[in-house]
Image 1 (cartoon, rainbow, N blue to C red):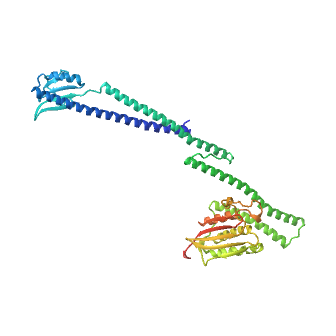
Image 2 (cartoon, rainbow, N blue to C red; image 1 turned 90 degrees about the vertical axis):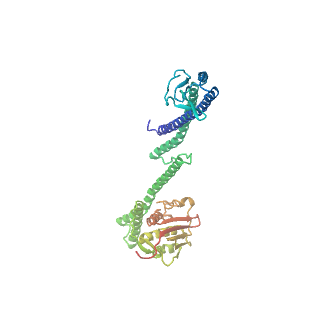
Image 3 (cartoon, helix red, strand yellow; image 1 turned 60 degrees about the vertical axis):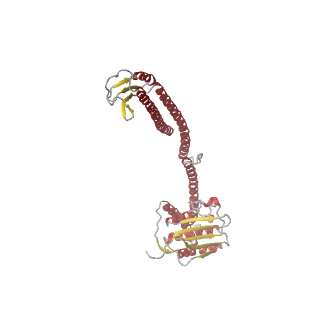
Length: 446
């Protein structure tokens, strides 16, 4: 029970409410008592001053303290406090209780002492011994404390009710997330949670839904990958097996053409294996790089030459717009691989008579290479996933319309390993622009 999140939240809220309300109630009660005592003290001070003035006027009109006990009796009827009147020497002249009359009392007999003067001469002193609060005063303070306690209880109950509502708003989405997560753990990747707030819980729900979408996409890609790899391996392996069986049975005569075909099929297999290896190395940060200072135009020019025959066979023109020298620190073989992969992708999707343009320049300390084609373009919904492994806009398994789907993935990993970036802008039916940015250097000095 104690491990239940709702119980923990309610317990925490209850403790906070109890401390807060209790503290406020205590402070309010103490403040009420203090203010009440201050008011009573001020009222008493005024009453005592009036009483002192009454005794002083009595002395003035009577010429002494004779028969002052009559006045004291009236004072006893009007005041609940004990009042003692003494002469200047401390001898009691009159006492509201009559106990100390004629006796000597000390200066500290009470906490209230008022001197009585006639002009410049002292005519006596008045001592007042205050008593505890009256029943009326106690009833008033009790009523105030009762009101404070009642208000504290109401505030506490309201706080607990609100805490229960708030805890439900917090716990229910968490429970839904937990339930959906358990189902995902069991393999159901179609789980989604409802987003009901814009706070941190809502952000967590959005992140969960995004993760679920991503996992589902990755699952689909893995399934497609298995199918794609099987398909990519099947064709060359079937061709190799067919040739070897023909040679074994004597149905095919050994010739340069047969061995050339076998060699081409082995190259296809080797390239697929190398692509898979490179992608896996890049994903774990173990891609082999031999960086050095290079002229990027030279690497681009050599890569273009390597695909020149394919471009001519397909009837696609490759145009170059290169500056004099753009210096970068990079692995020339890997950067050449990036350029070749981008050119392969452009040639695959560009029809006969089209053209591919490579434009290279420098801006803001970066070498910017644009590979522009006049091909079929990429739909908007596919542009964000175009660099995912084995993802192809054309879902058919033809190497002529997309190959294994690893070329752009490898290009992205290589560029990012060089602390650069790669992006795409495209419009379906209007071609694509792939942009690669790499950090530049000023000169060849180390």
